Amino acid sequence: MSDFYKKIIEGNKKWVETKINQDPQYFEKLSHGQSPPLLWIGCSDSRVPANEVIGAQPGEVFVHRNIANMVVHSDMNMLSVLDYAVNVLKVQHVIVCGHYGCGGVKAAMGNDSIGLIDNWIRHIKDGYRHHKTYLDSIIDEKERFDAFVELNVKEQVLDLAKTSIVQGAWRSGQDLNLHGWVYGLNSGIVKDLQVNLSSNKDLDTVYQLQF
Image 1: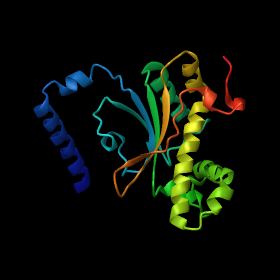
Image 2: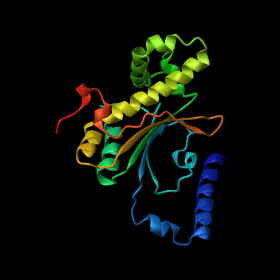
Image 3: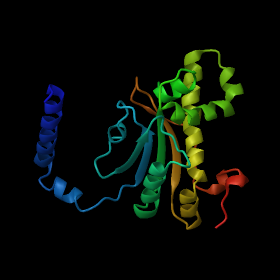
């Protein structure tokens, strides 16, 4: 057994001990169910832990993570999480949180083959194609990279709003708000991109579903 594996097993025991010392009923309370107000769709990057970024406790955030925080309309994993969060847990907020320096977004800006993930990154490349004129006009490479990270998040928020799950909730009068954030790895601060949707009226008419 590796030293790292032993370390994480011991880490779990210490974490449990700390929580019980703070509140002897802590895990008993958690076991009774969850009613988080927020669904977080973030990147799988190990440096962006959803709960810690916003100072939330277990039970307060429902989480879905994938490479480059993508909302792909045919991704049954993401759709299942979204459906459960919206229709069962009745979350009030969904945040798509990207981060500056995202490896998936960076890969989409180049042409190197990485492997199977090339097929996933193609979805990100589609976003670059839609904004190519603007992005190519940015001379500084880092500024262009940061701009694409932000644009990618905005596109994913729009793609969330296009789903029948979200539009169905809005149609039934559910209080559901979509937001786009970017996290700064070098600062710990999140940037609200001011893309906040609460109705399908914010979408182009071609995407507005009639129920």
